[in-house]
Length: 95
Image 1 (cartoon, one colour):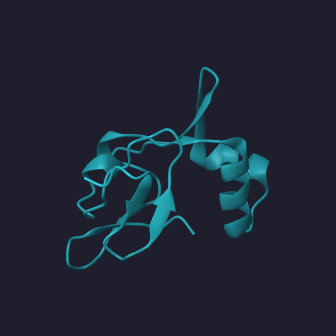
Image 2 (cartoon, helix red, strand yellow):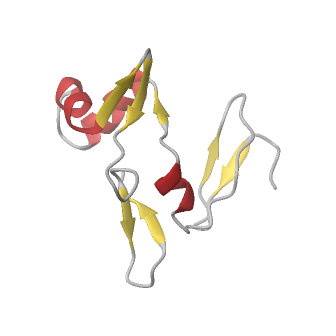
C-alpha cells in the first residue's frame, strides 16, 4: 500500500490526501458502494461548477447533511457518481 500521502489510480492519476492513509483504486466499486465520501463546501462548489449548476442546487440534489458533515447521497447502488464500464469495471462520473 502506498503510504506517502498519495493515491494513485489504475489510470495513473495521483491525488494527495492530507492526514489520511490513501488506498489504491482497483476500480472494483466496493468502496463506492459501501462508503460515502465527505465533502468540504469548497469541493461541492467545484463539482457544482463543473456540472454547470449553482452550489445550492448541487447540495440539494447530490448531498446529504449528516450533523455538521456533507456526504454524497447514497442511492441503493452506491455513490451517485458511480458508473460501470462495459467490461464491468467501476468508474467515477464526477466531472
